[in-house]
Image (cartoon, rainbow, N blue to C red; front, side):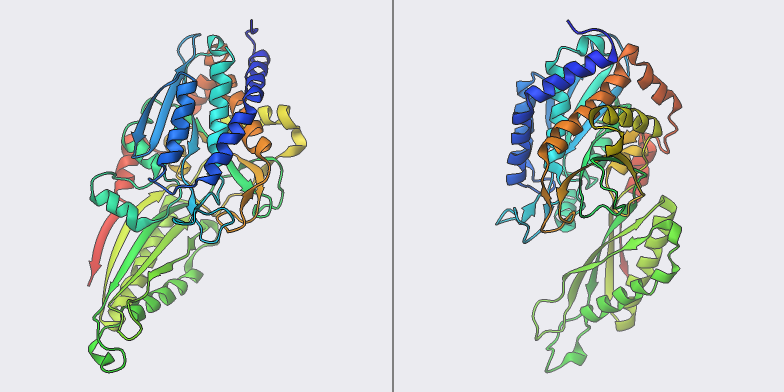
Length: 449
C-alpha cells in the first residue's frame, strides 16, 4: 500500500523505473541503431507502440504520419492534463559514427534518449500503482519531425495534402491533439563538448532559445553553352551568389539583443559544368529571439534574394516553409523540476543554461501553454555533428525520467493543487487558434520579378 504523500508516491515511481531500467535503455539504444528522419520514423513508432501495448495504454497512432499518443487518467479526481513528450526523428549526418548507410540518418541530437525517458515516466506512473493518488491526466506523446530538415521532401508532403505544417508539434497542434493538454514537458540530450555555457552540469534548465522561419529560394535563369555562348544564358548561380553576399552584408544591421542567425546553404548549384546554370536552390533559416525580430530579419533576407535575381536578370521563387517559435520556459514548472532533480542527484549537479541560438518546435508549445524543456548532459561530440554520441544512458534515460516523473507527481498529487495553480497563473502568448493562424502566415510563395 502506497502512502498518500508526494515522497512515498515518487519513491514508488522511481523504484518501478529502476526495475525497468535495462529494458528502457535497450529501447533507446535500439532506436539509436535504427535512425529515421522526420515523417519517416515508422520503425521507431512501432517500438513506441509496443511499449504502449505492454503498459495496456489506449493509444492513437499514425498522427501526422508517424506520431503516437497514449493517455492515462489519475483515479483521485479531475485535474490538469500534462503531456510528457519524446521526439521520434533523427538528423541526417553523412559520416556520423552511427549513420544509416543508405539514408545517412543518425541520432546526432539524441532523440533516442528522449523516447527512453518518456517511456520511463510512463512505466513509473502506470506500473507502480500510484494512479489512485493522482488527479488529472498524463498524455504521452511520441512526436515526429522536430528537426527542420529535408524541406523539399516535407513540402512535397504538404502539396500531397498529407500535412499542412511541417514540424511534428505544430501539426499535432493543428490537428487538435493539444486542445485538452494544459502543460507540457520533455528532456533533451546535450553534449558536454557543445554546451555554450561551459557549465556542463548533469541536468540544466535553459533560459529559452531562438525561433526561426525556414526558407527555400530557387533562382531561375537560362541555360546556354558555358564555353561557346555564355552570353546567351542567365546564370542562376551568379544570382544566388550575389544574394548570399547581400545577406552577409545585412549582418551589421542585426541587433545583438535580437540574437539573429542566418545560415544559408546551396542545395543545388547547377546541372553540368559546361552549361550556364539555369536553376540553383538555396535553403536557410532566419532565427531570432522574438517573433518581431524574426519577421524583420526575414524581410531583409527576402530583399537580398530579390536583389541577386534582379542584378543578373534572373527570377527567384521564394518559399517560406513555416516556423518554430522562440522557446519560453515556465518558471513554475522549472521550480518544481529543479527540486525533484536536486533530490535525485544533488544541488551541485543542477544549473541554469543561458539563452540558446538554436531552435525547437517545443517553442511553439511554450507559446500556447506552460512548458519546460530541460537538458541532460549525457553525450560527447558536437550536437548535429559526426561525433555526437550518447555516453551516459543511465543519466539520459533513467535519471531524466525520474526527474520528469517527480514533476508529474507534484503537479497531480494532493488534488492537483500545484498543477491547478500553474494553470491559473499562466499567461500564454497565444491561444491555439491564434497560433494556427500565425503559423499559416509563415507559409508563403512569391516569384520575383
